[in-house]
Amino acid sequence: CLGGGLELALACHVRVCSDDDKTRLGLPEVQLVLLPGSGGTQRLPRLIGVSGALEMILTGKQLRPRQALKAGLVDEVVPQTILLQTAIELALKGRPASRAVPARERILAGPLGRSLLFRLVAKKTHHKTQGNYPATERILQVIETGLAQGCSSGYAEEARAFGELAMTPQSQALRSIFFASTDLKKDRGADAEPVALRSVGILGGGLMGGGIAYVTACKGGLPVRIKDIQPRGINHALKYSWDLLDKQVRRRYLRASERDRQMGLISGSLDYQGFAHRDVVIEAVFENLTLKQKMVSEVEQHCRPETIFASNTSSLPIGEIAAHASRPQRVIGLHFFSPVDKMPLVEVIPHSGTDRQTIATAVKLAKLQGKTPIVVADKAGFYVNRILAPYINEAMRLLMEGEPVEHIDKALVKFGFPVGPIQ
Image 1 (cartoon, rainbow, N blue to C red):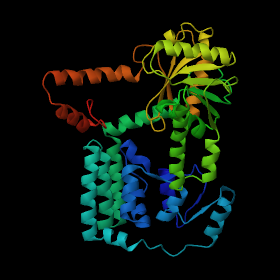
Image 2: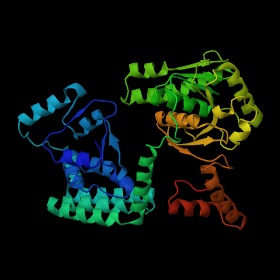
Image 3: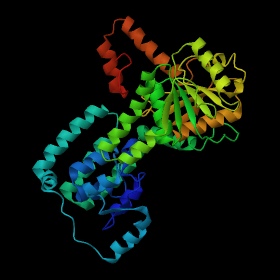
Image 4: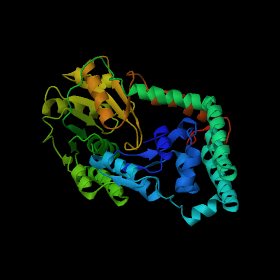
């Protein structure tokens, strides 16, 4: 229930949501340099308090069901099976008494508290955005107007601000990226039917191997077998997933039983035992061409002929990795970014001999892992490193011309990059 859907719910007297793990409630418009345009900036602060509303609207933060209940955003959380019946029962009860927000929130909504709160939030927000997101300033303005002058003035200011923000180049650019990303989700990568995916193998239990195992098992729901030359490599990969899942349990996002079930999907071995029927094997070993070619040969020996070999290389040509393969049509690049559990992009890199079904299957696997796959050419740098290189090169040129490191980094952060090119 995001964006306009939540704003519609905010206009109701009572709200109930399901306890499903996929249920999320939020107002993510700020991520498109917009603000909630259907009354959300006025109704949310009055429902849950101004500080909580500012956090949700300024960051696009999404709440899980229990978080929404605790915040006062919903009145009940029930299983999906009785969601409709509960909603009907609540509707038949009639309008309930208004819910009072905590005393702290009432003080913050008052003239003195409001002045202090908005000044602090504006300062913190500007530090994060460096003034590159006009939506945050307008959000603060609109919410403060509604609290100081009443809902009617707030609604009018909200509508005006929404229209003005929609015309900014920042919003137009981010909306374009949003729609392109949405269209990309429908793209299969190739005009072929992907193979059914039942299990995946991973070579290498390092940082990347552990991350790939996590998203494959815990996001994609596929059994994973990790091979490493040392037991500590396998232990490292298992610990990677355990730490992330246990963190969710401690935060009450996940039940302990579900953590244990997901961990049960991941196993390890020092040899190729358990690899015979893997549909895809992803290598995440050192950036060494000879070693990767050796991995291709070993996988072809120990896995079935239909098994796809996917290399996580960031720089080596896929065509060269497949140069000595007996089944080069089953070799492809699948480049993840670190940390794997957070970075959404994956480069899918076919070489000239990769068949269409292999491309479609690699794209399908990346989507199951919760990633945004892009199919790119097997050229120097692929896509990301190819566009990153000129950026870094220019920074190095400025450095050689005598510009201080801190000036270069500060200028690029001010421009909108999360970190500087040298930092």
